[in-house]
Length: 472
Image 1: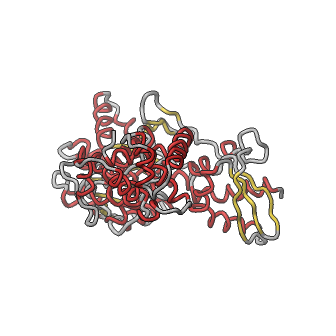
Image 2: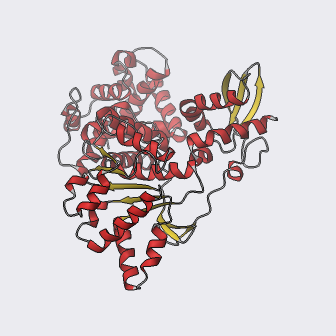
Image 3: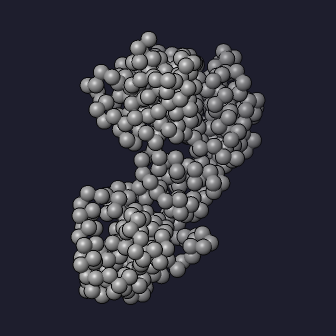
């Protein structure tokens, strides 16, 4: 077996574990360069692939490789930007992992499955693998994982309930994606109660209920969202009851979500509630602080954005009522990072959170003193404090003679801002920053000017510091 054939076999064996979407994203144009003395050297086309593979796929890749070739004892990654679509060394994953043929309806988030069944599209972002598990949702995630592996067997029906924005949609769609990954030929229909009701009404008007029954009762798995909206709709409840029974008796899987538990759905018929209660009932609650932080860190990795732990903790500390709102705040923070070229800080994020809720909660130890900085005149002394705090380095080192980059950059940033924004003379700046001469200060200002033209992160840091200190 050639290196290329071996690498393809490894990816083929990995795909059921990590799903097609991740294979397409992270294994495209990768290559196996060599195997020497038990070390398997794998080529990656981009630097950003390196950290992701080491963090997420290294262990599983090695274990999979060892099953094929037991002589492989370790794995090393090499970034080779020459790997690309036209490089014959890499694997064309799109060729070996073709997309399942379904017809997308124009201008709709729907697809037509075999047999003319119309289903909502699954979002590839929603995977059971990237759902952050915590104490409040561990049982729900475990149930979905089991259903994806053994549909129609252990937990049927699976009833998931919880408040708005807590992750029910992620679990539903993640289960649907996992079902299709485990068996690409199964027919998984995902719909909402509103769409189900509308189809009942259309078929009643067309006097063709057989069309409706034939579609819904020929699926392998039915996933229906927001079942609470079926209340007071007697004919819809009747059709759903018979559809449910037909699928259940045939050993097909039914997954249902609601904003409340079955016994709280008092406006539904007792026989429907009885059917729901006969299966597995799991609830999804708001994750705790640590899990919320893990969710934010995972989303930052997906967006390939680095945000400090202080900022992550501050967002998670404030948004404690909805995962959707949590991710919404992070989206705006990332937009600020990318569009305004500004590194997020606790203060800049506090301004974003204020648009969501009236009150911002300050983590003990931060306090509101940071907010008050802009109320006072900006001096070179306050600038030294602000920049040192931002970079989290001691003021003594910034003012000292150490030439390490971690101290040099803050020192040069202070000199640059003092000269360009506060209009302080070079000699006075040097006097305050360790009694340096004016040529040293001039050199520092020029250095920062040069860096800003090519270092986007430094530009973001500069903008963040200006906002923090109130410098316009």
